[in-house]
Length: 237
Image (tube, rainbow, N blue to C red):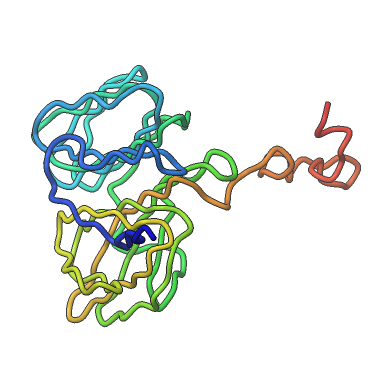
């Protein structure tokens, strides 16, 4: 009988330049790139979710050329070149056409409640239900997070503070600049002691977002006292 190969829950990476991990065969095809003071062209046929960890990076795209400082982030569909004296990461969701967006700098803490006293902000939301998104996670000091899993992989980067990730195979220390992948269905939990910790996190999918049947424009369009979202003839014309 063939032995079962146990997949790790959590894989750390150094903040090095170029392709760090190619998950094009994943259920949600993704490539993880390190941006480190050298020009790098991210491929066509994908939407790239990027974060500037330190220094300054220029994002060159069909939409124009934009200068981003530390703490800023972007979403760029199609071929995109990143250059400058800064460092950061990009997660490319292959075969996905998102919006071009620039934002930041990120705030100190998240605005939404998360488990065990942590918080989250949805920095780049899904364009439609099920699409990829980009988040800020904040862990206050003294967190011992409940062990949990995710149904799809995650890409993360520690942007401030320190802590550790607890997995069935042991503890992985986390310090600023550490890049990592949490594999689908991999048990893990984050722990902090005397320091807070902030992480940016790419999700390749979601169970949240607008649909053709419900979104703010159609929901708040009122016809004869009824939301247009409730009137099938109007929605399907």
